[in-house]
Amino acid sequence: MPSAEINEITQREWRELGYFYDRDDAAREWKLMGSRAGLRNFSIALQAYALDMRNESLSEHEHFGPYGYLEIGTWTTPEITEHWIAGSLGEIHQLGLTIQAHLDFVPIGECFRLRATFAPRSPYELVLEVQANSFDPAKADAYCW
Image (cartoon, rainbow, N blue to C red):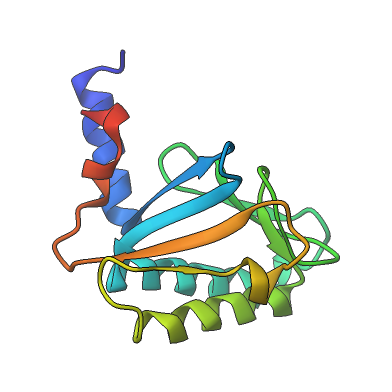
């Protein structure tokens, strides 16, 4: 059981990230939940990753969130797996733009799925759920309370 101090650090890290994520291996999906602003943070992070030429080499990657198991990486083809969300820098940049475009139109409480447009042959789905502005990503993590 984590200490109260570790739980507070984890809660703070979720709030700084702006969204909560989890991987459901039974459903074979990554699910991100956040307000429009929080999910926009993910979009911005994807675009920043893609614009950083240090990420040009295959297998370069970056971990996100307090547990670090959400990984964005550079690969030859776009894919969403239990390991990561990856593709060329151009494809990752486009994914960020696609997310940004959807955020303005998806109603609060609704989800949008990105496998079909980003990596249709991937074994995992990428699901983003738009929450109200008051959404606290730390409260979605049952392990830090």
